Image 1: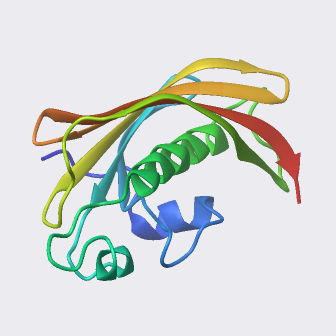
Image 2: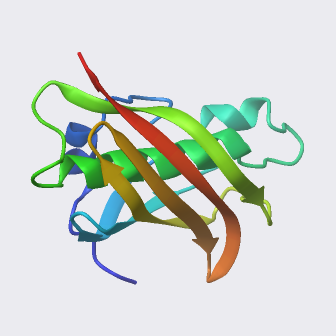
Length: 149
């Protein structure tokens, strides 16, 4: 198992989201301007499993997409040049070509890989994939727009 280069407290300092929507536990690889690999350990005591589904817990697809978006946000916060400046953040603008291939359940360790496709002026486009134990569970493209607080 790869050791984290950003642990939970560092991840939390880079994201605006808080409990119960913090979807990244650590970052194990990052190449600014290019890609990031982040980890989300799925546990059975997370709030979404109270209703999705009580008798057979499955991670909601929207939370998997959120994990991809949060990994992208961390990557953008580490970019230089065209990257984010103090008081700026990227808001999700588009979701396309998302596919959920295998259910994610408590006990799984999601590995979230995000690759930058484009970062031009105030627009960013990324491609994300999520694997569990080497099995591809989800893929998709997300578009972001730069915003200020």
